[in-house]
Length: 114
Image (cartoon, rainbow, N blue to C red; front, side, top):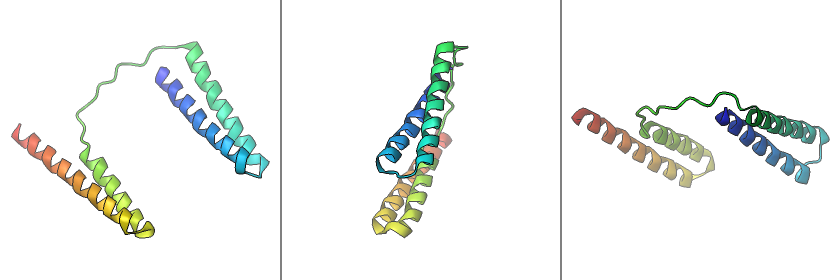
């Protein structure tokens, strides 16, 4: 249950940061109150999960995973955003795509040989 409490607590902190931002720069009252209620609700849920305890989280087993596809996908997204924001972001995205494809190729070679 601790992982769930951590997620609720992190969400409460994130929404709480938005509440502070709205309090400083916002003019409307309704978003401030709704975000504040959401942050308080998430904090109360996290506190309840920590206090009640409950059964522990089961042990996690990590399967073999590859970093190549997510890196390649992030590069494609950055390159696509670079079409709107400028050449510098296209170049960073292309670099990530090349790096991700290199990882994929290296991992597939390693899988074939070993």
